[in-house]
Image (cartoon, rainbow over all chains, first blue to last red):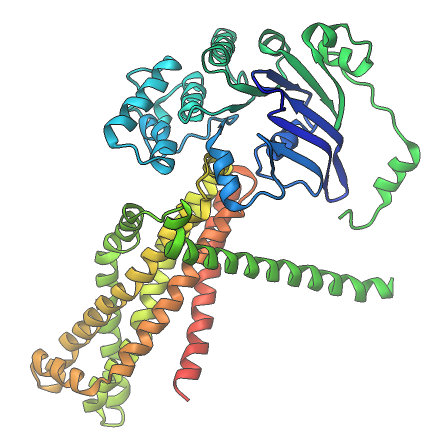
Amino acid sequence: MSSEPVIDVQQLNVWFGKHHVLHDVDFRVMPGEIRVIMGGSGSGKSTLLRHLLGLLKPRSGMVSILGTNIARASTAETLRLRRQMGVSFQGGALFTSMTVGENVALPLREHTTLDENTVRIMSRLKLEVVNLGGFQDLMPSQLSGGMVKRAALARAIVMDPKLLFFDEPSAGLDPVVSAELDELILQLRDAMRMSIVVVTHELESAFKIADTITVLDRGFVLMTGSVAEVRASGNERIQDLLNRRPRKIEVDTDEYLRRLTEVDAD
Amino acid sequence: MALDAIIKPINRLGRGSVSAIAEVGYAGAILVESLYFAAVGWRRGQPVRFSAVFEQMRQVGIDAIPIVLLLSFTVGLMLGIQFMSALGEFGAQSQVVIAVAKSVTREFAALITGILIAGRSGSSFAARIGSMNVSQEVDALAVIGIDPVRYLAAPSLVAMLLMLPTLTVLSNVMAILGAALYCSPQLDISPLVYIIQTLNALELRDVFEGLSKSVVFAVIITLVGVSTGFGVSGGAEGVGRATTRAVVLSITLLVVSDMVFSFFLNR
């Protein structure tokens, strides 16, 4: 296995208007690794994910996926890259006008010249992998929350990607279903040798599946380390997150007064 | 304070202008990209599929035929009634044929069809793409490697460019038929003679004027609907707002561009 990182982010800084959302983020994922990005709401984890997916282009800093610099990639290079990536979105993002089977088959239909029989067999195979065998003719609206996530996962892996992204796998699911999904992620890595990036705020699931964890807080990477290292961390913010303690908000008086009196915030 | 009263409106005007220009630019980019994908997309791995275009043609065109026919017939009838009574005051009833023929082919058929399709399809473009945007389906397309403009906008644009002129032709026929049914008894001629007189009165450029307008309307309706849809934020409420905005804005632009067109084509 090569030792080149599949994801290499260096000194990424992101601004939304006046808000500095990501500060000097360095982020590296090696082949075959399951990396969990953990952080509370507003920690910048969704913004980081959107950069990793190439949905946002970095203005400052470098994002390189599978050796391709996202900011400099041509349209053809971006297309080639996207065929090697799979993404399962938070709400599934299944196309509501298509059946589950058509959803899963879409990447194959668009990117390959396989005949209809092969496409059908391959997409059903992936549905079997996520335990949704036989559900190909249902519409997404007829599926339960857990089934939607699994169908989205089947669509994400149908092209056998090298890199899989999973946004909030356990959000909105009951504990049993979410534990099953964690199992599935582990199986996928072992069976298909993918590198997997999971964004979550669920501690239990993070500790179960992660090889390494990156903790984000208010746009800063607090630490990247193994599960044991994160658990043992002396950082107060990380311990707050692990022990579900409300964070202490320090008020900067000058800044506070400025925000109150400022005209035309944007 | 006095300075504030001057600066604030200027500030608002400036921001408004910048966002309006940005929107026009965005719509322009969608137009160029759609045409690009339609022309050479298949060479770049981003083909605009015939099946998608046909599906859109059915939705924006075929499904709208009954209502277009009904409305056009009614408008034709109404024009017949108005022209009969207005021209009757001068004893110029025989001129009704030419008045109806020219006003329908140059103006009313294209405008009525355009407004109808703006209400039907412009809103549905905005709603469909808007709700896909809200549920991250547009993002999902992008990360699968399917350009959202190629997949969602280009088929709609091609379908509209083909179907709106077609519907306008149908509308021409129906409106003139409507006028013929009302006017011919009053003019003491048969409907067939009315129609023959209409065909004699019409020049090719009259029909061409209406059709060229309908092509412009097709571009306006599609771009307003699609770009409003892609710009949706703020959940279901945002989708609702976008739908309303798409209809109001496209009908406004339709009427304004119609006026501009009429001005330049009739000088």
